[in-house]
Amino acid sequence: MKALHRPKAVTLLAVSALALASCSGASGSDQKSEEPVKGGKLTYAVNAEPVNLDPHASAQDVTGLFARPVLDSLVSMDAKGTIRPWLASSWKISEDQKTYSFTLRKGVRFTDGTPFDAEAVKANLDHIVDPKTKSEMAAGYIEPYEGTKVTGERTLEVSFSRPHSPFLNALSTAYFGMQSPEQLEKGADALAKKLVGTGPFVMKDFTPREGITYTRNDQYAWGPAGARHKGPAHLKELEFTVLTEDSARLGALTGGQAHAVANVPPAAVEQVEASPDLRMEKRQAPGGAYTYYPNTEKGPFKDARVRQAFRDGIDFETVVEKLYFGVFAHATNPLSPATPGYDKRAGTHWRHNPKKAAALLDEAGWTGRDSGGYRTKDGKRLTVTWPFVKAANREQRSTLAEQIQAEAKDLGFELVLDTGTQHELAADYGKGEYDVMDLSWQRADGDALRNLFSSASIATPEKFGQNASRLDDERVDEWLGDALATTDAKKRAALYAKVQRQVTNEAAAFPVYVVSYLMGASENAQGIDWDPQAYPTFYDAWVTDQ
Image (cartoon, rainbow, N blue to C red; front, side):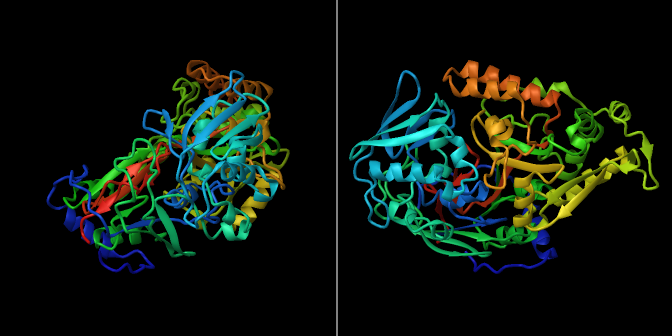
C-alpha cells in the first residue's frame, strides 16, 4: 500500500487512472474467496469525521462508523433482523415488556483493564440518559428508561416506565456501544476525543481533519454471534483517513493509497465496477431517507396547502435521476424501503403535479407575483429559509440544494440557502428558527418514525430532537406509542403504516432520495462486512498486499 498523500483539489489524475483501470471491461463486483491473511494494515478513506467521537452523545452516522471497531454491544442483529448474543450471553423479557433481564458473557475486559460486568452496563445506560451527556439520539431510543438494577456480577435488570419493544434493536447499534466506566468518568471532553471499549481494535491515534488509527486487541475473544471467525481481528492495524473531496478519495483508491473508500461519486460507480482490480459494494441504508422537513409550527409552511404545493410542485424524481445517474432512487416516503415497517402504499398518496401545486398556492392566498417572479401575499414575498452547512456536504447535496432552489423559483418560492457553521445551524434548529431542514440517518427499525415525528422529539435550545418538521399530531403520537407497546411485528407494521400515510397526507416531509452506502474497494481488501445499519465493519477483514 502506497503512502497516502492528501490531494487538495480535483485533478485529472484520478479520473485518468480510473478510466485506464476500466478499459478491460472486466467486473470486480464480487469479493475473491481466499483464506484470511493475518496481519497488515487496511486503509479506509472516508468523506467526513465525527464532531464528537462519543456515540452516546452524537447522532452523526460517521460517529457510529468510527466507534464500532472499538466498542462492542450487548447484542447483535443479523441480516434477517434477528437479535443474537454478543456481550450478553442471554436475556429474558418480562410479561409486561417493561423489564429486560440480562446475563453477561464471562471473561470480557475493557482494553484499559477494567472488568466488563453488570456495573459497567449500568454506567453506560445511565450515561446515555444523563442530561449532562446531551445525547442527540441514543437517549431518545430508550426514552422511557427508568433505570438499571445490578442483581449480580454478571446479571442485571433494565426497567422502563412502559413497554418498549425496540430496546434490543437499539442495543445492537454502535450508539449503545459499551465504554469503559473509567473513561466515562473522565467526562464529555475526554470522550469526544478517545473511546475505550472491549472491541477487536484499540484506538491508537485520532487527529482531527486527518483521521484515526486503530491497533488490534490481541486479547479479543468475544466477537458477535454470526461472525466469520473467532478470536482477534485478522488485521494488525486499521486506519480511517479523512478525504473530503470525492476526487481525492477516488484517486486514493485507483492509485493504491487506500484499500477502500466511502461515498464513491455516483458518476464514477460504473467505472469502478468495470475495473478488474476494484469492486463496488452498495447497501441501501435503513432508517430515514434523505428528506426535507418543513417547519409545520410557523412560517409559510405552517399552512398544509403551502407544504403540499412545494412537495408536489417540484420534480424531485427528475432532479435526483439526473444528478445521481440512477444510482440513488427517488424517495416517496420519509422511510427507506430497507426499513422494517416501510409502507410502499404511503408513497402513492402524492405525485409531481405542478398544476395542483399552483392551485393550492392560489387557494392559500399567494396569488401575486413580484418583479423577481416570486409569489406574494399582502405584499410579502413567499420566502422560505433553509439553514444549510456547505462544509458538511456529502453526496453532492449542495448541488442538489441549488437545483431544488431553481425548481422552487419556477414554482414561485424564494428558497434561501442560509449558509453558516454547524454550531449556528444547531442553534437555529433548537429554537425552530427555520422554514425547512434536511436530514437522513440510519436505523434498522420502524421506530425511526418516533424519532422523526413524535412530538416528544421536537428540539428545544436545551434538548436535541430529530422531529425537524416540529409536527405535533396526537394521532401520530398515539400510533407511535402503541407500536412501542407491542412485539407483534404485524401490529407494529400496521401502526407504522398509519404514521407514514398521515405524515404524507399532511406533507410533513418532502422525501428526496433513498440513501445507499457506496463503497469502492480494492481486490486486495477482503472480508469487509456490513452491519444492519449499512455501515461497513472490519473485524473479519484482511488485506493481501502486506
